[in-house]
Length: 304
Ligand code: ZN
Image (cartoon, rainbow, N blue to C red):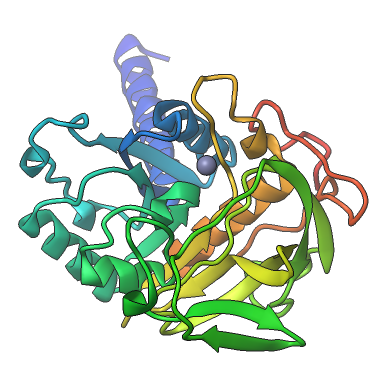
């Protein structure tokens, strides 16, 4: 082969490889994690773990949008949501400024995918659309003015309009999660009950509760409390999981190491972004009497 032919061949191989890489990258779901303020949690450690869980699956490519710190000017926070198929909110801080709120509403109502994690059901209660997008919220002065408590009883939804504050949790503990939507793509094929590792379990949630489908509950203080749900604000798809507490130092992300948490997060994220779930049920999914952990935030090689 002549030198010039070799050069052309190498050039063509390089072109093929880079096109293949671009194609592989294009297939992954472009995701934005919004984070940056949360006085009660180690938001940075939690967001780093969330990015690892999502990217280690091979399905998502994650960017971070970090807000100004508490006390700084929130109006400089203006991410371009429209570039993403999925926006994951791990945020417990000040309400965004008007143009950012409007951009987020537009993103959701036009069909954007959203995942909302743990303490992100708490902030921004003064933003009407956020309350509707989250469906159910906690604390931040939420009470009967914001909508009913919603919980599960005897196979039915209970909308409880009684007066009272939103939000409650006890000391962290291991719990059993009950699958209440066995035909929903996110939970289809998963066990009817599974054990969840030590976590801070929220209850007494209330909000507009419109277009909310309860996916899973846990029994807390005498009620089957929603622990995962979806919301369909216009064309948007929202998945909320209030599991996944990450405490005040980098070593306190143990709740996020729970396999049940990671698997439902990945399935909820895929559904929010695409409307379907193609992920098979992994073999290490927990049983009713046995939790399992993925300490490196990776799907094990023998999971399928
Ligand atoms: Zn927490």
